[in-house]
Image (cartoon, rainbow, N blue to C red; front, side, top):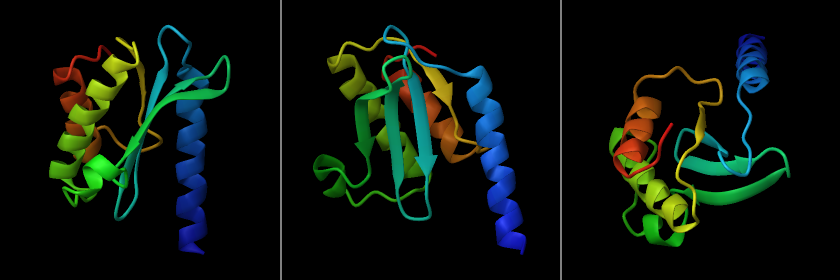
Length: 120
């Protein structure tokens, strides 16, 4: 029962955030998701419903580093995502934390992406 309630509360937080945050072609939505083992980030154009850039800890270049969903992995993922987004022509984004609190891994990822050149 408790896991169902937690999942429901998380989904409600996601919906509440998504009501306010929307990505466009000029300024896509940077959605970040941390699971127990891995982390994923993608830039989404909500007008077209298309993912412009995707990067996760399971990608070939990051898999060699054996990253995990911890603070160190979040920092490397944020820097690598910023470089990949800049190469795709994305300079500024809106940040979607996917229902997670803005601290810990989410904050480290966002700070690393900012250091990499993305504007939030």
